[in-house]
Length: 528
Image 1 (cartoon, helix red, strand yellow):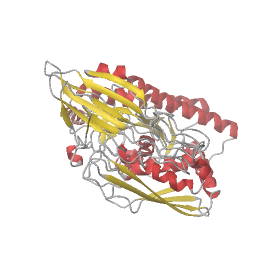
Image 2 (cartoon, helix red, strand yellow):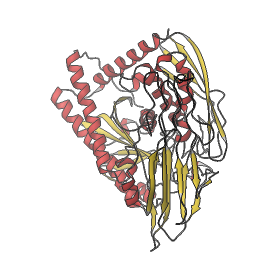
Image 3 (cartoon, one colour):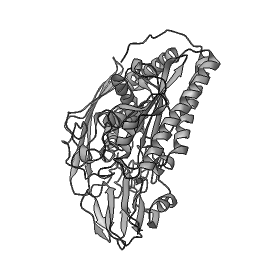
């Protein structure tokens, strides 16, 4: 990246708080604009998005209070990689950058990142980034059946989506020629661009109000304070190394071992998490790139340490993450990873066990882990295609020291469930049941959260395809400190278990039933 000046300035506490809240309001408005204008229900209804503002050095200064840790913390790394390829002096007014490079951003081709510069007095003063889950980028779809990344969809290298405020025509032609619903893709890309422009306009007004030429000094103050506070939280922990592991089973009866060590270094104020010993990469599309592993690792550690510290470049810096290259938690090209969330969202189950040895009062029993993701493809009677945006369902969260686990909640992600009315409006899907699973939470002094039951069919006379990514069908979420395990999950078609992670072809008479796992209990039950 091009070197930039880093002016020094001081802010009194009141002024700093006003500027900080104004900055948060700016990125929140950017996120609201994106969510209101997006075409994809998973973005519009479920909030599967991330928005953040970056300084001229590509450091994340503030994030919107929405979205998922996997997206936002991957965006925190991905934006700087985009600027490595397109330094500020190569960006002109009206230019907008784009990529879905999974190894440089969020780990799957369906997640597209757009970076919109904010200009003031003929100079870039910040960049507004967004990452959202698109309905379709061609290829295999949301499932885990792609044999390599090239089979999973269109790979968009880091390039200019817009040039001088106009569509970059060749880039748009390549993108829209490779997707099944080009209108939806175009709509979501314009929504991302427009939301970045909203952020840029609000930032310009903020700078005008407070007499700022740029936000570099403000960024330094925010980032430095966040880093110092995070290091202080780490220095309060006992020194040492803790080890833990967790086992994730999948629909094809395969098992993934997540092994981690957590080293606390109070002298340096750092935590080092190492995933040496975890499973090798999978032939299925569940492999996790380093950005995504880093995202959910830092989120989990920060949740236990001090979740009130702002999430930005400074608070992420003291947490170091290592993983063997080519393993399931550090995928390399061309290893597939469209369903990387099934492993990435499971990582906290191992990491929380290690953190429980450092801060037992902050421990949590195992939960269901990743949300179960569903995508339905088929054709209407006239032959025109229908494809649902990914819709997700969550199981139970593990119990905590003083509180039961949450029911049907998507920890550790922030994605909500798309309302069934919206799903039914997007495709000929008929829901037969959506209810909590009584008794699925593990017993304990605090009970684990309940999973849920989903049953649906598709009203069509033509064959249709189901991409379903499920997990924890045999090994249930474990309790902690004497708590009992929750119930394992179940994935059946017409009452028969499905034993593959690949896309399956069904017809209108088939009934799909999903029973999501419950969370583990905390502490021995009172009657034990």
